Amino acid sequence: MIDGWTWDETLFAGTAAYYERGRLPYAPGLADALAGVLRLDGRGRLLDVGCGPGTLALLLAHRFEEVVGVDPDAGMIAAARRAAKAAEVAGRSTWLRIRAEQLPAGLGTFTVATFGQSFHWMDRDLVAATVRGMLRPGGALVHVSDLKPDLKPDLKPGDGPNPKEDPRPAEGLPHPPVPDAAIGELVRRYLGPVRRAGRGLLAAGTPGNESAVLARAGFAGPERVVVPGGLVLERTVDDVVAGVFSMSFSAPHLFGPGRAAFEADLRRLLARASAAGRFSVRQPATEVFVWRPVGVP
Image (cartoon, rainbow, N blue to C red; front, side):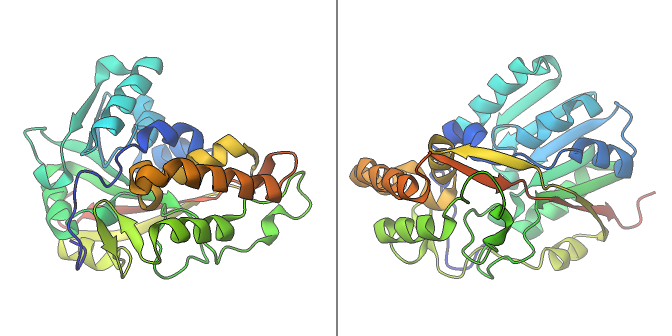
């Protein structure tokens, strides 16, 4: 686990309602790219660990006979079930509110196990070893995240606004960029200089060196695939506000009685940044790492 921090069930409390609107989608072509590298043929079972509201699992649902998503947050699981019903895959999808550390939970074996920007919140050695034992021969563990080549050292893919990101991608686009650095400063003004995470603090950020963890668990690789992004997306003020409240470090409950004041300040900041209330962003590329168990044909 993360040194000096203990997981608690409030980590993503209240964020599920903001995910669909607030989070940028994975790069187009991700499902096709994974189908190619993993040789998916519509059969087999997918396990999505830390599934959130089903974003990644439902993107891949039609590539498998069955999809199982697990997540410790009740709001996320409820959102995933609703989304599965809307996508007409409820009959062959299962959504369980459990921590990754509670696997295998009698779920059986799987063709592919995915982690969509979730692995860093877990007891990684325990979960990696457990998932390895749940993979069928020829199976794979897949980590999926936004590609952020200039990531600030204490942030990981999926962690949200990154002040080091190059502001130039919005040049020549119809609207100003989202003022991520200013939003980050506003969050710190309300919640303090050390990143919040549930009831605790992440003084040193979330852990890296995923490769060493997976090697210890008996995986070989990775095979790296980058799915290009670059689409120009338009974001409204409401979209940006939802994005802020979808993050663990700025989850709605963290603001307590100051939430309304924070949101009002956030909306004023965004109004100053764009008089039209519109922002332009370039969809990030999606980075995929495929790991395969050593000694399993």
